[in-house]
Image 1 (cartoon, rainbow, N blue to C red):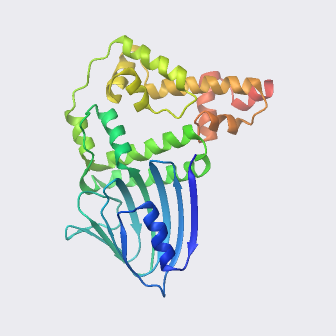
Image 2: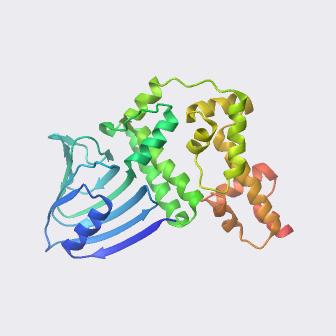
Length: 309
């Protein structure tokens, strides 16, 4: 379950305390106590945090993360962001890397960020790419192009809204965490993208697909990801996707969704639960998307099934 924190403060000490809780390696170098106004909202799911805050103050901050990776967007009229003495376009999101990033502003700034545990993020990146020795790091702090920057911004909005209602559902939270990481790793130039270009995928026998199917059936009620399925099958995530296409003309994600839809269908037949509760239980954060998938599979709305039993 996700931990939700909301803070409204006017004291510089409280600003520092909350900041250090989520980004221990970062520091606020100057906060004018006479002008500070602070509103903080965050959801933490263990290895991942989604942060949104508004801070009115004269601020100089420095961020150099060791055990975390942060993708951040700073929105302020006079924001300045720099790394290694070079300016970064403050209108775009940016990604922490090997060098410190400095940010400063006067007035009010609205900040939103994904913060990932580095070890957990590397495990996912290695599983997806098939490169077991991948060391995850940023090559360029800015998005690869404007379209990908916009895509990241939209992904943040989606994850923020879905996690706000689904953070207490482990299946939903796990999928949203993975979505946040993959949207970040594809929007920015990272060693993950290099690994995708160079790593060779192992050939998959039907036995691999059978192992994956068995794992999905046994663990669909748990917050498993495609990377977990690939690991259980003994193959990289990309290799598993190719294997499913060849053997079943589907994807692991679609198969997992099919199994969860079938389980939701059984729950609806048993009666007693609201459709939205059943949807969240089986990892569907959006009731409308759940209804669409359900109609495609069963030819009627889930509410109709619920009323039949």
